[in-house]
Image (tube, rainbow, N blue to C red):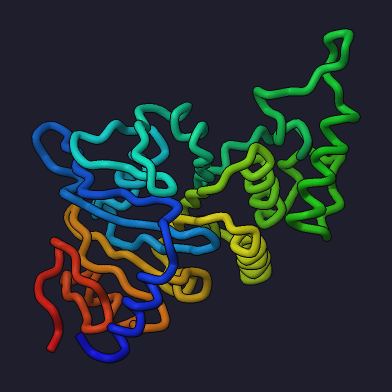
Length: 273
């Protein structure tokens, strides 16, 4: 191990207990292993980028964490304790929220209605408490995106970055500690992409851990502290983004080559010289 890699490993060891640890996870569909003995972890206030071609297994691995799929093998730990995640309700109970690329927002209602969708507040008379819901929405949006002002408009009228703000606010309002973000800047312009980047930095500052699924290397290098690459259902390697460059990561994605400053996984073709 070279000095730079040793330094990275030492920093990693001194960080304490991971917020999330997925160990030796496997799942097969029709006899084909979509995820094959994959391990990944995440620390509080950290962004881990998950990369790989379509079919590499990254979305399937994360869907196991979100409860969409039930793993065939392996263990999941939250703050060092083993947990059973067999459905989305189990995941939410562990503070895990997923923000899909589609955002799953109700376009015809405003930010507050989306925040409480399915969990609406009611008055003592049984009617919707719109005043209380808007007040809570203003609090959480003020903490997350102080420049947000369009509380009375349906979310279909909002920009892509503002819609992301609403989706993230909905997740963290119900005490999410772990966020899974699926292609959060896809189809966004430069200004909106920068806005989402600021939102992610704010979440990190609050100690929330984020798994970032992305095809965009620039996003991962801009936003992630570490990255993990998968290929053919297996982990090729994991590295601090400061320890690798774009070409090395492309080599991991395309050829399964693990560079010297990355920690190889079972899917690594070989370590570079």
